[in-house]
Amino acid sequence: MINPDYPLTDLHRHLDGNIRLSTIWQLAEEYSIVLPADNLETLKTKVQIQQKTTDLLAFLEKMELGVSVLASEQACFRVAYENIEDAKLAGLSYVELRFSPVFMAKTYALVLEQVIEAVVAGCKAGSQTYGVSVNLIGILSRSYGEKSCMQELQALLTAKDNICALDLAGDEKGFPAKRFVEHFTLARDAGWNITVHAGDCPRR
Image (cartoon, rainbow, N blue to C red; front, side, top):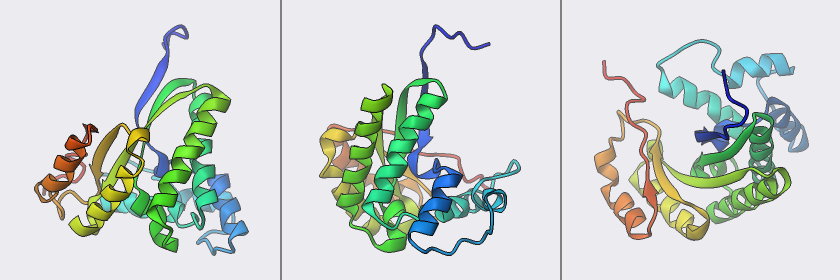
């Protein structure tokens, strides 16, 4: 049983993987985006894992549908703000939200720095409204390769003081961590903490 006197935290929550069904639906309507569903119940099966699986890439495909409605910086702000509200509704007092600006920006070729600025602003506004403490972790989406990750890192570094750590996520088998030593050396030199996804893609 959870002791209500103890503060609750979530240290591994993906901001770009935690988008409300209703928000996906509403943003799709706002930006005239066609979804592969005609109601929220059907949409739920498209964007959420319904059964236990070890297929990371299938999981990422569902996340991609969620971020496919992020057609503006305002949409990114909304998703960030709602993440803090959802944390409050879950009874959390502190949350670490990780996000990949490349992943969020890619469908509509949004400017990475502006996506990051919107996420930072949305989290700050949400934290002020709901009283939930938050730290942001920048993700490098390894699935897009080293060059893309370097661009992503440089964009994240423009908001260095608003980000506490750097993460690496995505297709671990296709893009092993050793390819990103330079990226994490730069992150270390910037004073960031480091966290890396590992073991998400079981070896056959």
